[in-house]
Picture 1: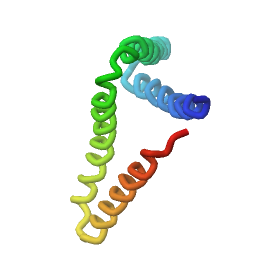
Picture 2: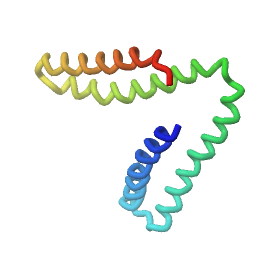
Picture 3: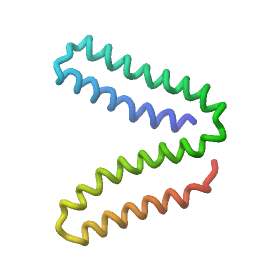
Picture 4: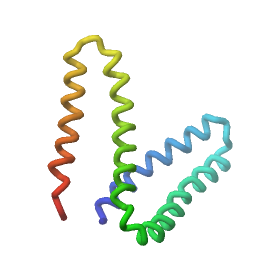
Length: 116
């Protein structure tokens, strides 16, 4: 609970600062960039509240929703790694990347049955 919240906060602060800088570099004034960044942040709260009410009633589809969400994260991670593997001429580097991905998947499998 509390550590998850702290981890999310630790992630969100630099992300929001980065978003703010991107808006400034795109030509937005500081006030408009801050406004749009604030609206963007509030949408996460709105999404969280909506998810709380709708997903509470959707316990039967929850496993499928979690599969979609987790596979999206895996796709993002792997889509960044695969192009780098194609650019490396040595097969040892590709083998190393594949081994690291397999180790990561193995860790997830081992921790799946770990309950708090």
